[in-house]
Image (cartoon, rainbow, N blue to C red; front, side):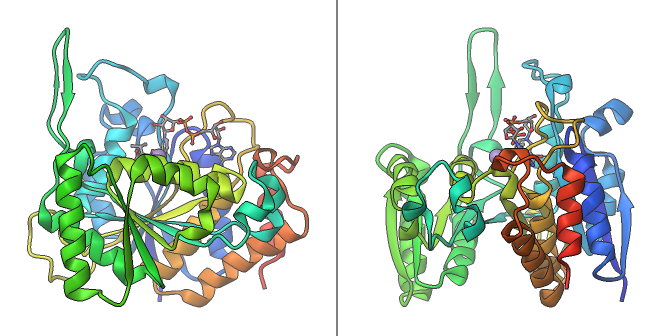
Length: 353
Ligand code: NAD
Ligand code: IPM
Ligand code: MN
């Protein structure tokens, strides 16, 4: 069976890490890739970061693979000008992808690549479950010459569905992260998570931790966490912080999943495509040099194989090839080494079994 994948290389290092990822996937199975402009590249061609055609193409695919968008070329503080990131937000919303999974499992080969001491990070195996289509990212925005506002709002239904994802993924414990000492949205979040917990998941341990404390504990005792459940913006920030446990932001993959229906519609239909992308951005500071770490992108492709296409064996093949390449000494610049993107890709390909 051929799997139809829409690929969105995007901007900056995006195309540099997408190309070797497709080479890797071609080694593993029968895939049909359909590439589209997205983000800044789409703004240049069409004046908007996400065209209707591309959204329709994504809806019709088995999975969507994205590298990264954005860059100084499109940076602006003028709210009337298009931004690459709007494409990403539009795609997540347009595909109803409310659940963003960001696994953080430092590999032993990279313990020394982290700025944190080995004793702190070893054994860490946590999952950030980030709400992806609500909160301050999607509330009303206002701007005048002298003031600006971003509304943060959540409904019980939005909180309940992401909490269900988190409890479902937990092996032992869910740490729900909020700012309930200050924010009304967080107080609703806490109530809804607690009620769902006692109703449907009493066998899973639940704790509530304030976000500032959670940021501290992520580096002081990362082994403490199993699943971290949190809202859109807190999840964005905490996952970049957690990336450093693995040695580099260039190592962290993600999967964004929904239940197949556009927002507001009944969610009983067939499952729609997921979106798979590294946690990092377009790294404009190193773009064009051929030195980007492609491993977060490879591991995102592995998450696509597992969560998007139900190809567990192939997913595990990618993950063990990455692990073996690192065991064999592969280090890109972000990990303190000298391997180029091409050398890193070759090292992983050579370790496919
Ligand atoms: P970034 O993640 O792009 O880069 C942060 C730092 O990490 C940089 O020093 C960069 O060189 C390094 N880095 C990131 N990925 C790397 C990799 N694979 N290999 C080696 N080094 C890597 O964050 P930023 O600089 O704040 O953002 C740059 C642009 O990317 C912005 O326009 C931002 O909006 C966008 N962005 C996009 C996404 C996405 O497309 N999903 C995610 C985050 C940021
Ligand atoms: C991420 C990115 C995006 C986010 C930006 C580019 C809109 O930082 O995927 O983590 O904030 O969600
Ligand atoms: Mn981010």
